[in-house]
Length: 99
Length: 99
Image 1 (cartoon, chains in turn purple, green):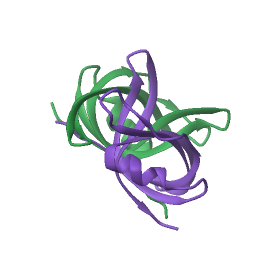
Image 2 (cartoon, rainbow over the protein chains, first blue to last red):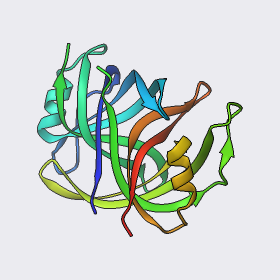
Image 3 (cartoon, rainbow over the protein chains, first blue to last red):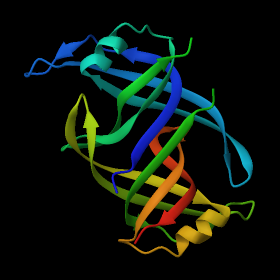
């Protein structure tokens, strides 16, 4: 059971410069700010969060063209940041620029 | 754009006792441990994470019957833990006991 899928919309609030892994693969770290109203236990709930995100290869090159404040829809999976950090990072495999 | 959806499978690794909000709504906090292989930039990647999760109302009562080590598929949305904490919490609206 591999299921680990996240679809999330939000604003680009931080974005680092593109860099390259030792194997030469482009990588971009960025942060998305999300705010929405969700349904929980039959009621509406205001939801806010900021999620550290990362994109690699072709997706990184596309993310690199985004600007702070762009509104995007991200599609990817969650992983811990590293062996040493339980901080969650959204690995983005696809995205759409919404506005 | 309200999109904020997570579907994730994993083991129950921690589970608190059921408690009740001031409005009498059942609530259960628990933690899920996830491990899978995901595709990123055309390659396979071992992914691990632990995600703080919460369920309310009827879903909380069902989660309350789960045991440490149960394998479940969760469906919900991500939110920051509180105004004071950016820690991410998975709010579970649906789940299936897989084994």
